[in-house]
Image (cartoon, rainbow, N blue to C red; front, side, top):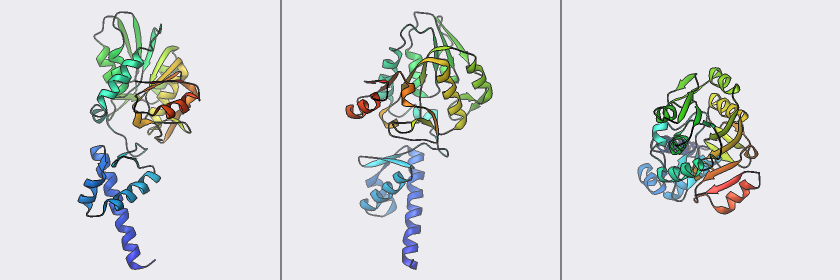
Length: 262
């Protein structure tokens, strides 16, 4: 390798590190803006984004990319509450409609599950089990909903409990319906999340539940994170938006669950 090519390789590495840093700080990056900021051609940025996608660090979109959550990076609940909000509200309402005759419900951590909790009917008795402090707080004043908050270590980014205290409590329950979120869902790898402790809670909730519904925005599909906690076939239903192409939704349905796009 010549000195010039070594320098070029190092420059590409530094450039890609900066792209990942910006994507994680802001939630997404734009090819044109990156080209201006980095002083390179747009095709160079596209090449960098392809390389970063190959390494599982970003997912490309039309004109840009967004960061993939991994063992080393996870968005906070506060950030999730600002992205794709109208889509998440539609999904949450459709997921809540799947309640059926369930009397005991597990509601996962995350912003979309929190919206599902808020969309649950308030005119019938329900017991909601959750590891999420925001979910528990949003339901605590309801006259008809009894809230059981799982104990454990509270994760600062998501304000949810994890570790053996949480999973041990869950193991003692039989739950009618679990509303589960994930950082990624793919046909090959199933449902994934970055943190092993979170993965254990989600897996235990699915084991405890008679029915499981996954609810998530279209950007979750095809994304793969660090810890796998369920196969697609473990789900009764997947609720997402029409931004997931119908052909892709059909491919997921072939593995067992009903796929609802709203």
